[in-house]
Image (cartoon, rainbow, N blue to C red; front, side, top):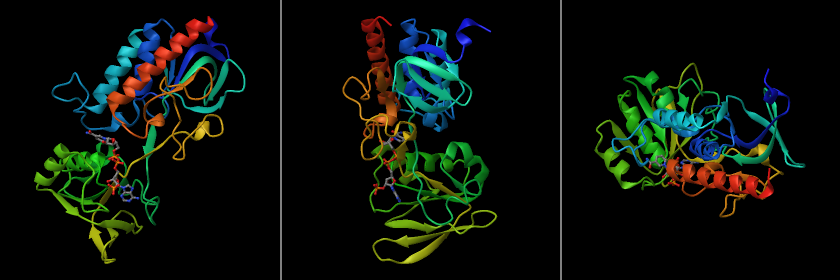
Length: 314
Ligand code: NAP
């Protein structure tokens, strides 16, 4: 047992979350010799680790898999002395300094905290959706797409995620029907063009899902045209839902200022309303939500935390 492994363990910078924001923050903090600790949360790498291909992160002209990018972020952060712990924060206490963070396995005290807990998929909240998760309903094409070889699947949503994941699903499925609540896509033009040109992809416009009938496996989804009110059904074995994200901020309710959608409110210096507490990435960004912007916010938060530690002589 080392001296550091006393309970609670103290660290100068504790980073909660291991997506691009968390691992970029860790890289900067580690390069300042602060030996930051990263609590990974459920999955190392967060949402991007489940993305099939990332084509808009500079430095990779041919694109890179989400998993590959996370692996590189992780290795680079560790190379300079980051400790990555596979654990989940269950409680935070900002009432006295150093701040206290409890996880399933340990208790930590920290001079500064960088919160990068990201966001999670929004659900449709329709009958059958929850019951059929794992029986055909999914929120991750790269995780579950291979189960749908030569089957018909429905994708819900009209944004970049829906199109990107629909394109990925064409590798496995025989037919991908994108059901969108409007008659115009929100997604950017490159993805739009690729989806429109893909012979396996079909669009159903102005339509919402109303029910996923329950059973052993998904067999059909019920739909409604929002303009005509006409009710119909689509036969499909899989339903992939990509209708946006909600920030993972339950842990901080009543402890940090949140906006009306639950995002942590940060100022231009990534400060989250409590001295020495910073937030970065999608947990504090309802607007850009890109790997590059999250990583940039993470770097910024770490720079501020490093300055704060220096100024206070911690
Ligand atoms: P998004 O851009 O917010 O799109 C969500 C889509 O779901 C919209 O088309 C929306 O319809 C639809 N929707 C929302 N609530 C719904 C509901 N209750 N029922 C039915 N449909 C609903 O989310 P996203 O696609 O996850 O993208 C998030 C961010 O990540 C964006 O900034 C996006 O640009 C970025 N992203 C980028 C890439 C890339 O560049 N390759 C890939 C993935 C994500 P409306 O259009 O009618 O609002």
